[in-house]
Length: 395
Image 1 (spheres, helix red, strand yellow):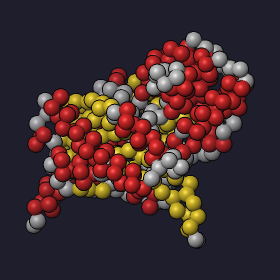
Image 2 (image 1 turned 60 degrees about the horizontal axis):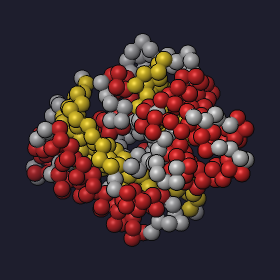
Image 3 (image 1 turned 180 degrees about the horizontal axis):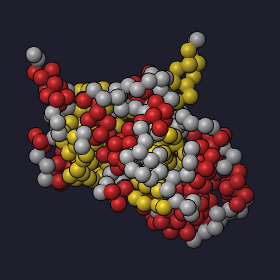
């Protein structure tokens, strides 16, 4: 049997795997890396760290989000460059966490999404829905010497799904099986929810994007501070203002909020162009910067709450927060005001750092891939069947 086949066979049959999950989200501010030991009985988080992008790299990545500023040579180059950055994150995490590199069995890398089109465009008789994540996994595998699983979204889309959300499978593994009805609420650049009824099966899961998370808040903080701040630290600007009821009502009229699941969204809808238009609208109406920040923060809280009431089969008893938005006390306070009957917790309360949750999720997805376990949730993505996500690059 060839050496590569032997290695993959060993991974498939090994009871417990040490996996490093890598994630860079729609905020594109760096690589989250989490090392976990996991098997079918549970997992243990060994180390977590975030490795920020340089400002020059972040600026270059943001240019790729916009078809008007993106160029094919830049996509080609940054695909490889981000592969180097992701590989470096693995090596640094091992050094920082005191983890022997040779003890790591597998890497699960989400990559960096630069475009996601779940609705699609017609090409002849077909509607072509597409997605593109960069951060070349061949580079990651080569630099680290560790088998790498990446590019998770396209298989779900090929099966008729939207390629997102991907984390409901991990949410099920981590948080299902109790007597409580739970909502796992991630607030990254985009906010998404996974609804888990008591003692649920995968077919019971409801999951979708609720709308912007930190994306509009971050852009507005950058505008109102003249670029001095990349986000509203601890929600301080927002807490000094009052949400403008008229503007908030207009923002809530966006058609995305009326769509029923499965549904996903991203920077293509709620990115820089959207935020800049909202800012112009607010300034034309004479709305102060603190009130504008309070308004867009309220937008995230209100759209999450409305999605729960309109689109979930039942209100959860517990909301378990993860992602950077959980670090914004003003946003969390607004969420609690919107849903007083729901107890708000953090993944930290379950032993997983809120900022590490997405990286841990991709470690779980990679584990399932090499074990030959279907790891999409068709009820969440709209796929026609369960499929095994990801492409494996052997070391």
